[in-house]
Length: 299
Image (cartoon, rainbow, N blue to C red; front, side, top):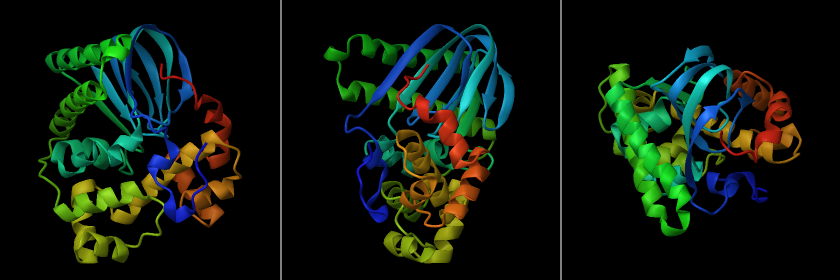
C-alpha cells in the first residue's frame, strides 16, 4: 500500500515497489480481453491477427505492425479477436524519475514518453504503425527481452534496461517520423521542469515557483514548455496528478475526496471534473471498473 506521506511529499516512487521492474512476454494465442488499465507503462505490439481495440480514444480495428504505448490510467481492451498474437512490454513508471530521467532531455524520447501521450488529444496513449522492417527490428528486441524472463536468475537489471532503451528509441523515431514534425532538444529549463514535476507531482506548484527552481523567467518557461511538451506546465502537472490518482483509486478504499487531496486537489469537485475530462468517467466509476485489476499481470 502507499505510504502515508503528506500531499507535498508524495512522488511516483511512493507508489511502486522498490524493485526496478521491466518485463516482457509474448502471447501467441491472445483471446478477447475486457477493458482494463495498468499501474505500469505498457507497450503492446501486434504480431499477427486482428481485433477490435477499445481505447480511451475510441474503437479501431488493429493488426500486424500496430504498436501502442499506454501510460498509467489509459485503459484499453481487445474484442472480436481473430488469431491474435502480441507482445507486452511493461515497466515501472518510477523509472521515469530514475534511470530514464535523462530521456526528458532527448527530443525524440521526450516526445514519446511525455509530450505525445500527455497531450489533451492523446489522453495517455501513443498509437503507431511500423513498417515491416522496423517492426521486425522491434520484434527482435522484444524477443530478447522476453528471453531474459526465462533465465532471470542469470540476467542483470542492466540487460533489461538496455533492451528497453533500444525499444523506446525505435518507437520514438517512428513516432516523430509519423508526425512529420521536426524535433530538437528541449531547452535545459524545460528538461529541469519535467524532472522537478516527475519527482513531486503533488507539490503545490505554481508557474512562478517552478520557474524559480528551473532558473528561468515564468512566461519564458511557459512558452518554451508548451513548444517542447505540447501543453503548458500547469496542464502537464494536471496529467501527472491524474495518473497518480488512478493508482490510489485502484490500490485502496480511500474516499474519492481523499484520493483527490493526496493527488494534489483539495477540492473534491474540481478533482472529479478534471478526472472525468481526461479519462471519460468519474473517479468512482473508474474505481468500480478497474480496482480488481490492479494486481493482474499484463496480458
